[in-house]
Length: 160
Image (tube, rainbow, N blue to C red; front, side, top):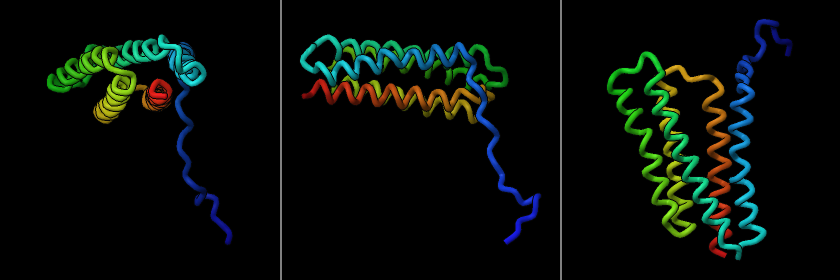
């Protein structure tokens, strides 16, 4: 079967490049997650790595929550209600992160993973209503997935 030149398959545009500093800082921020999860696998009886993993996860979850505070201040075109929702949501991850540091490893990791996933849902909701950089959601997916896997691995290692 011969296809007509105008009948070429449609392809997606190439993904938007992530600005260099954003890529370095974002992916570099995964190194403590990866190192601490690996530490839990290789030295599960060493007690500090689990607390360090939960504490780092809590700090990062608080950081990503603050992104929505920045969006609320900087994005044009948000209604007053949308802006208020961004401000309110921006503090929820911190309110989830703090008690996660006080729970046993499995419970703390579960609470942090829930917070990261909820934040990703909020990112998607915001992106549907506003103009975020094209690289933002793909980056958030990769960072969130890696952080959540590391937290889950850490929780499993701590329960051994």
